[in-house]
Length: 441
Image (spheres, rainbow, N blue to C red):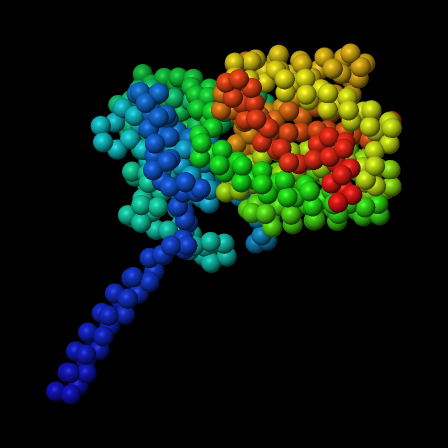
């Protein structure tokens, strides 16, 4: 009797830990990817997907997220950066290899999220991932979440009814790898007779070009952090420092003011190094008399910004440096004067170029005038179409003269309005007087 009671009790006891364990292995808030959507709630991304599907009306669209860069020999991989279109539609930033499928013509289930299969051994080294189930659907807000092993089969099945595949981009060079969506579409078309591809490669670009008020809030948060970093660098610089030492001051300033990451790899270039547009070596010394060019910005929850400042290492511009700097500033002002909703990009860019042409310096300006900014520091945009109200764009003229051992670029970020523009990067010293005063302080 005692033995039977003991066994019965043991059996009952064995049920309790199993139930407790089941509760414990379901990750709570803060555990298991995807953690959810960021920086906005799932409803925001669901509404964006609905807007896109209303434009598509019928058919089927596949949007691939970014894949992770592998690290050899179990070393730590580079930070993962999500594809901008995928992030804008899902808010999912922590799941490499994810795929979104939209089927606006379906009666009930119109959206599917496909995630790579779990590998529990790899997860012990990297990050825990959620199992399929209601929790993952709740966190993402997508109707159906499945594994990518099922992607081809589900898309083929949907295509038998849709018969139309929407290509949302990107359009790439003939020398580049075929985009994943087009590669998948070609396989589907070979198996579903009568299926066709429709080019919609400009649609997401158009939708993302006009920023929502909540997006502007996050872009302004990124600018607050960026402003703090640039000011810290201006105040800290002195001849004898290295470019790397100054970069560390800059990026600490970003982080202390709320930056959650970098919008791109920071460029800190002194003297002749600044004449190389994307200089990243950062081993050079900062010498007395050098101009220092910093092209760097913070990001907050995936939203980027972009600012460049050029200033003298010793706090005072020479007469030659002053003249060249004022010329770049004049080119920026000329472009800024044209910037408003409806202006063409070519008119906007040519306003700056004319300043350099008249000065005989056009050959020292060797890049485009600006670009859109958002989830990507270079957000996609169509320069053949007028700039819309609500776009966020940079103006960044520059002069690069290796013979003079200097490069000068001034880059500010603007919100385009119906009647003009607002400089979002105001408060980061820009004029010669502002820069010299900030460096004295």
